Image 1 (cartoon, rainbow, N blue to C red):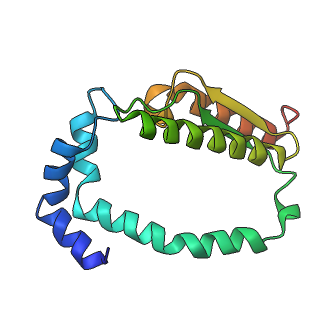
Image 2 (image 1 turned 90 degrees about the vertical axis):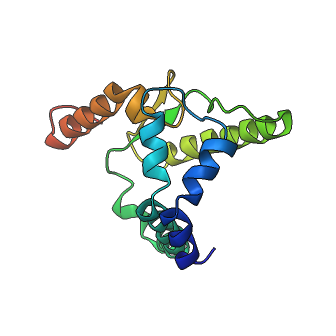
Length: 154
């Protein structure tokens, strides 16, 4: 979809109207309304469109980079332990499960590319780890700081 059309649809409230009525609730928590309000603004929609336009360039940069520059750097990979709780048809649930299996494999692969890396599974979280288990993010950052400052081996 062209950026101008996306912007106009978001600015007119079309996305929010559609989202409130057609898209199943992904999360059931107090920030649902705020999350929906933010995700359907023109600014958010345009930011997402810009990210997708840059995706190809980013993937090319990753493909062509000198991996030896980062392979000895400390790395924590946080992975959601739960699948998103979306009410969807059995076929869509199957696709979502297969996607999660693939994603988990990619997360393990990413972890294996760094010496001394850590892979943490957020057992009580779906995609929303920062909201569901923020303590894991704090832990990972603290451990990275310790590792980088030399107070602990990776």
